[in-house]
Image (cartoon, rainbow, N blue to C red; front, side, top):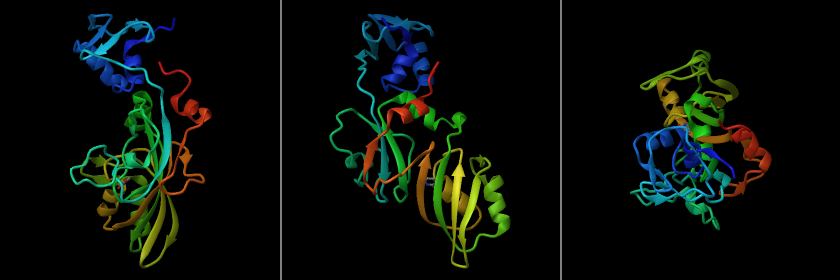
Length: 240
Ligand code: URA
């Protein structure tokens, strides 16, 4: 018998993040063996106890962890009113309900993880974990040293100052500036907005690494399962 904390079981089952799972419990939306639970901290045996969220039995399906080389021209959301191609359509033969970990813009390519593990997704996207993401970016025009400094130290965006970033200049001339940018946050359209803030448009954007995982030998549109060692490293040994 393996007892685990209820909120952890809910997040492992991909219902929601651990924090939200606590909220669900406090709101009385979770039942264990037909009893509403409203206290945090109770332990359950996910194999023996019947756990319901909003009267629906949770399923402890197999956990899937994929790394996709997302091409441009695909959206990371699962629903789109404009009927554009979706990253999920690139994945074949997986019956579990997986979803992207965080997001990449329609016109951004690169590393995108997909999973059905809410806990894993939360660990990689929650701002407090400051997971590193590296991007190859081509900006229009010559970015001055002063503006490079700004990108490094923090740019003022409408949702606040960006965190310090690692910036490496790969190429710079009158027409273009190519940078390798490593950020520890992932706000919506962050690189494009950082560019707009210093008056340099992003011409192309590719995420070449996410949480230490890179594209390796994948071709655009291809994906692979994470190895056990990669999963262990990203999930951590002790998730309490
Ligand atoms: N920054 C952006 O502007 N877009 C992305 O897709 C990722 C980072």
